[in-house]
Length: 289
Image (cartoon, rainbow, N blue to C red; front, side):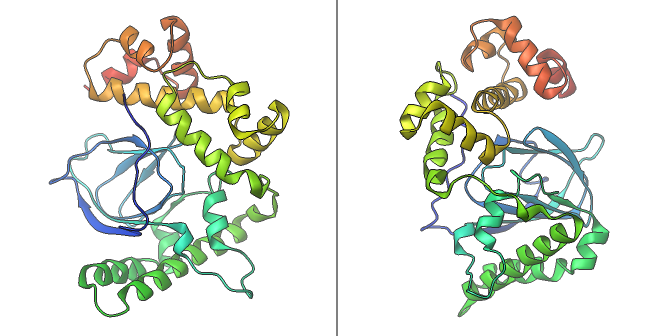
């Protein structure tokens, strides 16, 4: 089955930092998600990025943030033949906090996509925040692995995220909204992993609520607060993203793909696909040929 969850061991590799070059590692990168946060700084080319089914275009000098649990994919923009960008993946729990901090940066990163904070930053905004030197230093420290490199790397990451938070707060008061009850966080993490690995099975909100030991109403209310969509919508979105990967990276016909991602009715699958992606499965496949 097409697994959308990308596992990264936080103990073995709490950071991953590298320069991505589409000439040696071809795009597109299929839709996936992970518990890490991911930052891109684009040096060359133009890329089209899907973030939780929202398309954005990144050009030279842009920065893109993929928050934890954000479903995302990356492709070259039409008529663009190559791209280079810095990639920084990191465990948000590694960012330190102290009593004087107004916000916990770890909690902020986990709430970014739920609160719909903008995650694409223009070259002008990047320049205003002076982010490019921080990306360069992180890349250099990661490559050198000198004494206390991890401490410098963590400090630079904390500075980048803090600058993004300041930008968001100036733009809009994003962090005044009360979120999901803290005691349910781990349960919802596990439920998302379960949905990702069982989306092709028959899933009901009632059975998922029971797995968390919650009533249907409590589960539904806190799930919506956490993800800004109902559990049923989350399941549908996961299935459609898996179907999109199969459409783009396999030669299976539409009816086969519909069955593989959990739909017994192909017509209903096509309607769901068009509702989320804006085009039919056949149209999506033609766009990539």
